[in-house]
Image (cartoon, rainbow over all chains, first blue to last red; front, side, top):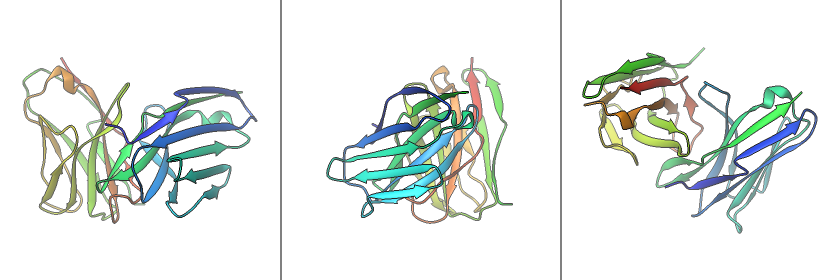
Amino acid sequence: SQQGEEDPQALSIQEGENATMNCSYKTSINNLQWYRQNSGRGLVHLILIRSNEREKHSGRLRVTLDTSKKSSSLLITASRAADTASYFCATDRGGKLIFGQGTELSVKP
Amino acid sequence: DAEITQSPRHKITETGRQVTLACHQTWNHNNMFWYRQDLGHGLRLIHYSYGVQDTNKGEVSDGYSVSRSNTEDLPLTLESAASSQTSVYFCASSESGTWDTQYFGPGTRLTVL
């Protein structure tokens, strides 16, 4: 069973636009992580936000966490073609990381 | 630079054969994980290890086994390969708690005919 569920499943935007992906989860968490996966590659960690944090930034990435709504969002500003990838949220449950099914982002030049 | 490698990158095998996928990390991480990735299911945890001689079952462990004889390696064995085990397999490691950042290998694409 999946702990995190991403929304939308797929997103297509033009270069320069912002991309927003959402993640909802079911049980309480210690932290939430976002990962990126380029086609044919392994996952790469992007950012970790702890349950007592509401917002975190890393370069063009902005992550928010709303524990009352059990949801998180990942915003990529000024997107580039190189941002084309799948993005996954992951939450800890029972001492393990549980991944969602991912959002497939396509950034068109 | 520290890294995590998987071999082979691609494997084709037949139903019923035993297959072993290798995972080797030079991060000196205690925790290692095996996942499979399938369309419509995301990543699912197969087995994991918190240290040498420690192994634990994940959510889809049936038909798979692992052993941890040293810090660097966690080989995944399919005892008798089935077509349902056709998938992409990823190995990962983390330094401390399982909630910590995980570092992933490049994956092994396994096809069972």
